[in-house]
Image (cartoon, rainbow, N blue to C red; front, side, top):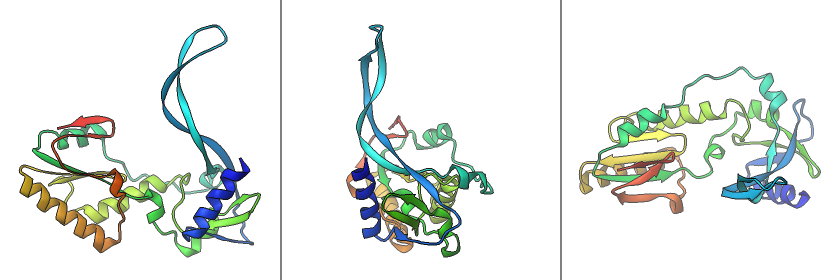
Length: 212
């Protein structure tokens, strides 16, 4: 497990997401948890078959529970999934985009960075970018995405966290809408995970629902 923590710390240091810090009044512990894959069936000691998720690896997480208890909560709402899926249904063409590294695209105010400090066997480090596990991270991220795409949402686009769905009633219309979104991404330096994006398709999966 030490290797998992070391590899993640080195990766985050290398890309500038974290930095060493020696004096912080807020220090959270780290844990290593399993990465869950698809579903399988296992047999328990009684011979019963039970569904279980496969473990595909391990990842480091920061336990921010103490920090979250002291944090004033942001109640910015997430979109209702059923309403979002209903809005996406029945269009001719779609583009499905995926934001790269989600929360890590959001900068943490330098004044507050020390609050994100975590400790591990290799030292203490703080985040320059928003970390997973912070109680207000989902609300903050959603607010940022809506601010970026507010002119498009409900017209030819729907957004849920880092899942961006674009649609049009013809190939050319969808392509034109895609161009608008990509220009906006470029203007705001919002990076996309291209290998997870799908362009100019007639159906796709959004939040576990088939859209067509």
